[in-house]
Amino acid sequence: MVARPWEHADEARAALRAILDDPSLGMAVLSSGRLVANVLEDMLPDAPRERAVLVMAAQAGLASALRDYVQQGIDPATAVSLAAVSLENSSPLDPGTCRWVATELAAALGLDGIQPAPGMPATATATAAAAAAATAQAQAPPAAPGTEPPTRTARAFADRSPGGRTPAAAPPQERPRRGKRRQPRANRAVFSPDELLIATADSDGSARLWDLETGRLVHLLAGHCGEVRSVAFSSDGQLIATAAAGDVARLWDVTTATQVRQITRAHARDVAFSPDGQLLATAGGSSSQPAGVAAPIATDSYALLWHTATGKLVRRTSGPVVDDVKAVSFSPDGRLLATAHGSSAWLWDVATGSQVRRLPARGHALSFSPDGRLLATAGGGDPARLWDAAAGTLIRAVTASPARDVAFSPDGEMVATAGGGLPPAGITAAIIPDNSVWLWAVQTGDLIRKLTGHQDQVQTVAFSPDSHTLASTGRDKTTRLWNLRSARPDHRRIGGEGPAR
Image (cartoon, rainbow, N blue to C red):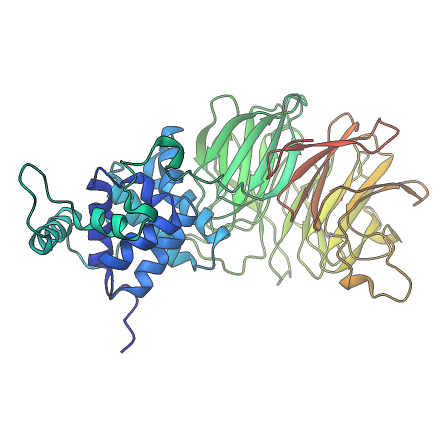
């Protein structure tokens, strides 16, 4: 008979505790998939599902990651969320399984306030560990005079390890080494107004602030329970707003890296500050939820305007919009708010929340020109397009093929697109994986430069305030900074996998 999911959670919990309590094993085993597989084969012979999950967690270095997060000053509950997302990104396990194993590991490690995962058998960790130890002692052979009998976990490792050595007996150079921890993918990157920092919205539920000159990590903003998809600086650079998948939008203090407040009542897809910094627009987030109930990923066609100083809702857009709002962007004078809904884009009066006009623009990316006369749209499998914001009419298509993001340079001379270049003759543009950033002249529509270096599709683009640098994020898990003043399109990396170059 196939075991029910988590039928052997008691045994798995006891095995974790016994491994950590064994001085010859402990964290060394929990950092190596091969070693933990050897030990668990003996300890969990009838728990294939739990055993496989724990082996995957060991291969991903989950126990070490949890301790690293806590040592960085992250609270244990947030550390569990970050570790679960990290495991989900690096394994085939579903989110619920990742959450379960992260919680169990945290409880076994003794992280403050972490209890065994809800929904599992209620046997206490200490009781299960004691039962496992008693069983091991009963099954152990008589000890030689003057020696202590090895625990069951130590015997299992000694029997299956090359040469029969335990980690404690092995010289330091032969002990298991923890593999390099996988870096999260950046979903977006934006520059601070003073151009000293760059913020990334990352797939592990965090936003990160990097020193633009050195590329060093300055602050980690952790607290979201899903991938951070959007990040924005206020005009004075003192605040940063974040939005994450399945979570509320949050406001942070840039200097202290502390959360100021939660903004929305439910899931928000995008955030944008007004030019004067007094308002924050969110794409969705209006549905209120009972206490203790997670915000759903539900249809929300409204853009909401919040007062940044108080966190109070000022107004929301109104009108005959049915599709979810995907993105929000303020006009440079702060009078208009643009929203993208997948099948159309809308312009709204910020003062009243009333509809100004509708544009038949597909996509999920928006960008106003610095003078506010033009609106660029992209995404949804369509080319990037330029629209007359006042008349609501199409001026021209910027790209020849689909583009995933679009941004105006602050000097108003260029438009950057994530993808959208010319496909080879006879090839359908939509199926070409475009790994390049393209720069176009606003006035003529001519191609200025093609920037190559990403190993997978470019997802987002953003200019520095002086228009001299462009940031791009890609599915290759790299964030690249392009020097646009150079005759050659040289670039360097911020964060991501691999060395900076």
